[in-house]
Length: 417
Ligand code: SF4
Figure 1 (cartoon, rainbow, N blue to C red):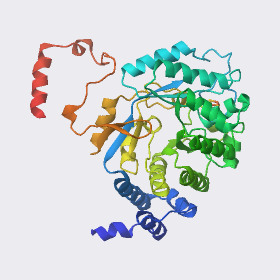
Figure 2: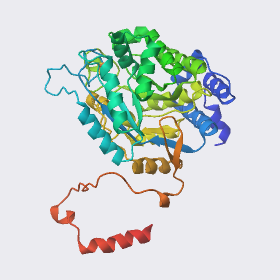
Figure 3: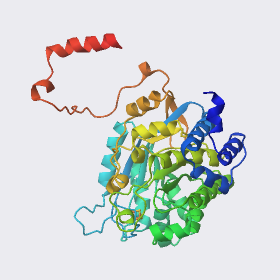
Figure 4: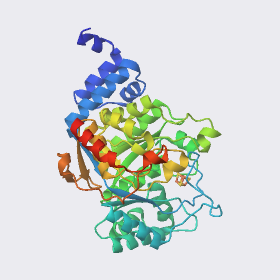
């Protein structure tokens, strides 16, 4: 079989769009829709094209950030139908961490090498703008070197409405207290006919755009996200991507784009409202690849979510257009409460291993994508900063205990290497 056979398997519409994307032509929404429906050889060609674009845009370095998530309260009455995280204040597992708990979590994170705290919570009806300001002030006072990446546009909206300030003044007030960047979450799909179904009480598209642009104008850069795999259609995703690209062309404020697959297991949107059962593997990879091709050259950092995908699929995403592995997290509640089961802590040493296993070079970055250290040689990797843990072993008790024979076995394994 000749190599031409591989190319001839690709359908003409997909081949045309991929050719345009790799030639540096800006894709339009119709192009994105074509790619978002790619299957079989078309899908494989899409993934390969996105990988080529990734190599051209970002080379072989794959970045990650050592970060601690802090979901400071789960009390929220917004009622987003895909949310398994929020609780009424009277529920047994409702929580609202006092500042001392956040500071303690911060200390633990710093000891484990964190450079960023990612701080988001529910929309607590009894809290106002001063609460957000207090969180930033308290953490910055204790950890002046740590970058605070905090408060989704929904949280900004909630605080701003109660502040009596102009939006930009409110954002400057938080920035001057120590806020570094904001998460571009609460985006889901930036099309109101979808938002009206999945999150009828959440901020609308125009307000999300207003807040993000205002943040960028006052020097608060942000991430950008999409949540897919529920009720949206390809034309909604294409519209969303176009909005994100337009904002970036205007402000240059996005640091990265992060596709987030919908986790369906434990929430109402799937169980009672008939949404699709979350994103599937082709959809996850397609979304990463289309993000790479559609958003270039304006957004060049495409992150995949190992929490949503799991680490094995995340490795495939690195071969499909992604160049960033995201954060170590250390703790994660929002996806877990909706049914994600891919863990909540991925230490730097695991990140490095996973990245190297797909033939790429790991590098630790800051929140704003400044490279802190490239890890070219595994022999020069720093020691783990994770607390010592006993490995969990299964099997008969007598085989679980260390024995003299283990020493010989270790030597034999060393010879096999
Ligand atoms: S997604 Fe956020 S705003 Fe919506 S219900 Fe959950 S915690 Fe509240």
